Image 1 (cartoon, one colour):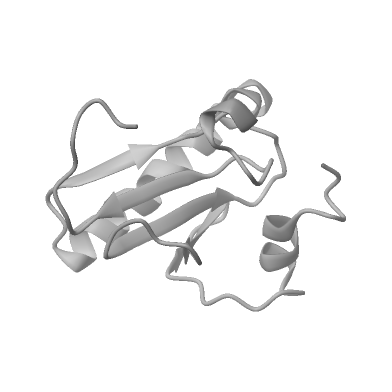
Image 2 (cartoon, one colour):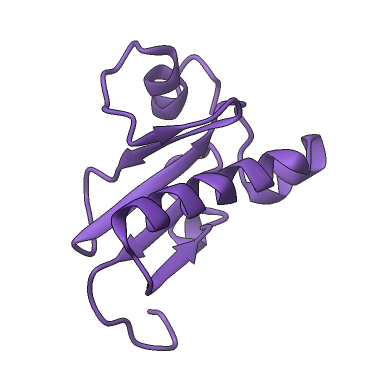
Length: 114
């Protein structure tokens, strides 16, 4: 997927409006438009990379920026129990091929995930 066609790149650029729940220099947090739980946020790096490993290969510190936003959101909202998910590849459920971390909370989860 090219950066020009990427919905997350368009959100980051302000072409598509989406309220930013938290931001830092390397990432933004937005609400998922198809939530699977009462709390379902996406933590999206500003730099376009297809998946988390590609993001790490380009600049490992950017992964830390994603987790800094997780820390900010969970601390601010008093979220103690949550799940973090990176989907990599269509077979794993990735539908937007710009790395992003799902922060999911507000209900009980089973294991293994489905």
